[in-house]
Amino acid sequence: VTPLKLNDKGSGYRMEVNAENRSATILYRNGKEVARAAQDRNFPMRYVGGHAPFFPRINRVVLLKRGNLIRGFVDGKEFLRYEDPDPIAVKRIGLGGYNTHINFSHMEAHTLPPAAPKESIEKKTLSSTAK
Figure 1 (cartoon, rainbow, N blue to C red):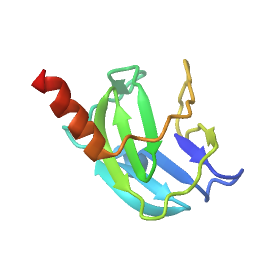
Figure 2 (figure 1 turned 60 degrees about the vertical axis):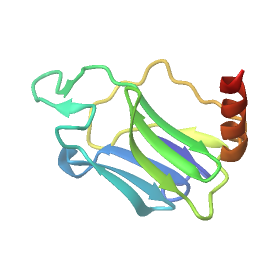
Figure 3 (figure 1 turned 180 degrees about the vertical axis):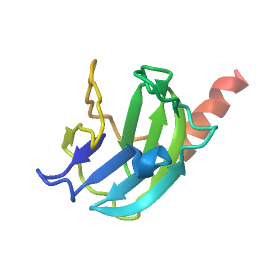
Figure 4 (figure 1 turned 45 degrees about the vertical axis):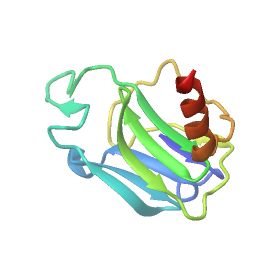
């Protein structure tokens, strides 16, 4: 999954799932690696081989950027997190695969409102639980 700043795979953020012979997921910022997650036995998607090589066969992959926080999810489980000290403005996304057979369906792109400051969330939670 690749949110792109320009029509250039070397700019913006790029999350490469099944990188390095299915051993890692890597997040790149402007072409430079900034975070990685091992695709070990705890990773939510596993390579099993055969004609349907991944288990589970259908996976929901999400790359979420909100402010300076970039997070990677597979099937609702967060496995990658990166706080960018100088976040890149992103307005478009690109999807693709390298040296793989992949089908995309039910694709969605959303512009999210800015995240609420942590302090106001904590105050709101405290005040609503105090009632």
